[in-house]
Length: 224
Image (cartoon, rainbow, N blue to C red; front, side):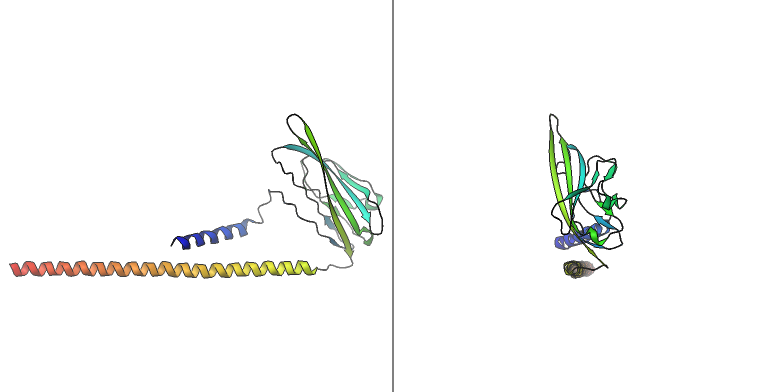
């Protein structure tokens, strides 16, 4: 019975997590950016750097660099300081919008939207966090950089790795659901069998008491 109780609690917990996963957005998670854009569409250049010491106050500024395909050096194209953004490279004028952390100077999400993507946007994008951690008696500066290798395609495609990953995810979910279903059936059968056994034991005990009472009554009548 204890094993069945544990399994039922696991089922409830998994169902709760599945229903709540889309609502949980408070924690910082460093997710890699997509790397394939479609010409003429918008694309989000993702860049997240989580602050490891959440209790320490911090401020950060962000700079985006770009190295076009076939070029040797990075050039500064965009910056954001928590209040205002600046597009430095004229190739991206009116085509980059901030899509990261808002209403805070403690930036952790530095994603930007690249509008009206062109084939010339293919290349390597480097996102750089310039973060200052403010301790009681001193400040500590850190620089964190991440790179996005962007390829621009004429139409949307899906990579083999993405397809395999999605298929494996659904297979895992289906397998888990089948296992939980088998465990539920097993538990309910055990509980039902235990209940039937208890009823049979109660009935046998009742019949024994009734038989004993009948014998006692017969003995009293004979004695009279």
